[in-house]
Amino acid sequence: MMQKLENFLIKHPGKAFLFLIIFSIPAFFINLGLLALFADEPTRANVALEMILSKNYAVPTIGAEYYYNKPPFYNWILAGIYQLSGNYSEFTTRLPAIIPMFLFAFTIYFSVSFFLKDKRIAAISGILFLVNGRMLIYDSMLGHIDLFYSWLSFSSFMLIFYFLQKKNWFLLFFISYLITAITFLSKGLPSIVFQGFTLIAVLAYTKNFKKLFSWQHILSGLICVLIIAAYFWNYYQYNPNLEGYFSTIWNQSSRRTASEFGIGQSLTHFIIFPFEHAGHLFPASLLLLFCFHKNFLTGIKNNPFLTFISLVFLANIWVYWLSPQTRPRYLLMLYPLLFIIWSHAYFTYREKLPEINSFFNKLMLILAVMVSLCIPGALFFDLQNYVPYLLPKVIALSIAGALISYTIFRLKTGKIFAFISLLIVVRFAFSWFVIPHRFEHLEDRKYRDAAIEMGNISKNQPFYLYQYHPSELDIPHHDRLIFYIQCSRMQQVKFTEALSKPGYYFTFDKDLDNPKATLVKTYRNLKLYQVK
Image (cartoon, rainbow, N blue to C red; front, top):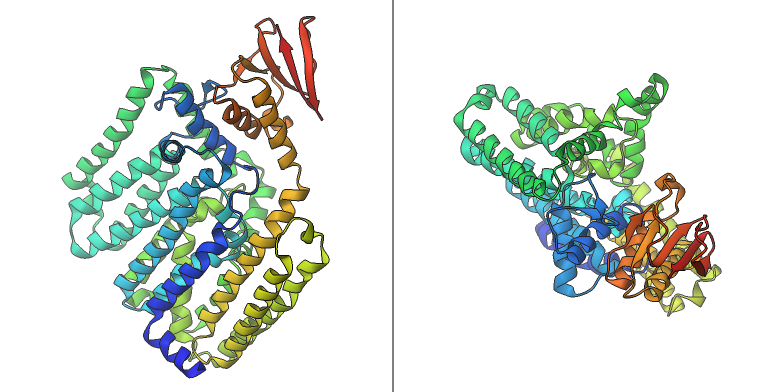
């Protein structure tokens, strides 16, 4: 039986990749919509919802006030999904991020398979994008812009290499600049940075630097600028404050750079940066062990594709390495470049590094056994009160963990495929046990329920958020509250500094100084008033 599995993994790594993808789909979708929106999710959701409510898709707003932080392309997609589905749930809000996550994994697989002609490397590097620590238990459950944005950016890298090999300079520039226009209209200036540094590094290394002055490059760049300019021209018809828009986009990109922080904080970040991100990418980062072979750098240099992705990584990573407040999700388009290089090193040098390979194999087995032994621990919390079929789920995952551990022990060359399936089991456990536990114990749910109730109470009446200019961060769940209120009312919330308008007023930790104001309900520090 094990020999048949071994032979299958050797002969059909592409089918193994497809099986792991299919196996992972329910793991990532179970309870995807359970938790209330958090982090940047409600900001994206608010902008999309207000586009629908205002019927104006050109001008992003929150609380009917101009929102300048991001251009709206991603919000157009989210608004489209809202309207097609007729649903504004957390699950729907997260779909534009989760679907590109799987498309990203397929893009990695097909790109590596095409350029390296090794489906083992393609399969492992593609699936590692889904099961690295950062993705496994955080980014994969959030409706952030970064997965969609990073997928497009990575696709641009691959297309640049494809047309570089073909020496088709027009399509190289035109398609990559077309993607740059879309990504700029999604996230702003980082797109220009990626495009610029990537082209400069690659063309300089390949001795084609003069192509930057060719008609193909100039024309493609102009088309990119015209697409972006067309959006802002249309935006100008509704709001002439382009200076405020541009300055905000600039500040969003520059505020986390080293110039904004002291030397001490910048130096600390510089030192811990690689270790921090190795931790985020664990256990995929364990493949770094195989990069210590003496021929590793030579192997990179002798392979055009590996040389290219190394150049792209080095050309862009330094920006984030020098930026003290870099967040891991900003690097999602660069992480796969590491997975490809690490996977190549694993399959190329594991037989030449027997001691490291033996240690790696034992470590995979130890981790698998530890996971299997930890799964029954779910029975010792209060999960039975809100996780249906808790015992059967624990038994099923424990058996799966034990079988995978045994498979890792018995297999000779395909252990890593079995280990990756164990990581998907970890995601099943996370989705079944951890997410419901958070739902029951975090305050997010209470704030969401309060916002929905306020929205239902005030339906068909004007609703205002009393704007007394506190710091936004001083209002817990600020954008989230606005989204749920608007979603339950299907009418816009508006900010106001006046207290005389008839309607409902929402305040945080403050009373309305208006004798005509009646306190309708208090939700902790949140208060709902009515002015007649």
